[in-house]
Image 1 (cartoon, rainbow over the protein chains, first blue to last red):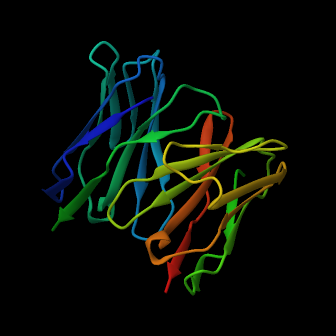
Image 2 (image 1 turned 120 degrees about the vertical axis):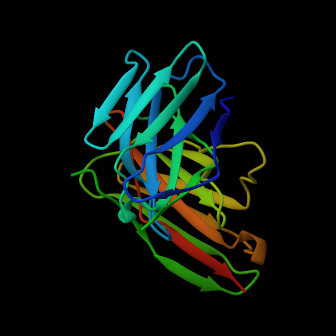
Length: 113
Length: 113
């Protein structure tokens, strides 16, 4: 089955700085890679996703890159704000609504003033 | 659109009792729903895939006789934790797929005394 590793486990940045979270996956059949933001006690919220036919995707301050050959993908958050503080999870799956997600271990991001 | 609800949001029960958690897709039909468990400061771990009209598919290490899943309609899946013990205390989250995206319920916090 799929195995997703995520680093770092914790990340502290100053407001305005950039944050980068990296994930690797093992199953070459995976072709959909979503990123979720989870605040304490809340459900995961999809913040951005990328499919394997694309190398990079950007949405305002958030971007994701994918290297299929190396089987890794990264989340980039620029101009971080205190409200970006949360736990971020990467995930991987073979596309389809009936496809189960395999989650990374999570990164606790703390944006300090 | 694409709202998933869960009930109850939290429950406290005595050891040995059974607890039922409901997951509903409010504005779409879902032939497949997923049940995850999340322990404090850990990632979401898939427990089982709930299939409408058929038996659930359980992940390795998840006891199907302890975690009973019923998906009787296209909008409702239930997870029953039977003979709950303190080690079953966790955050249980369901999700349902729509148009290649998974939507998560708000989660149910189970505390077993």
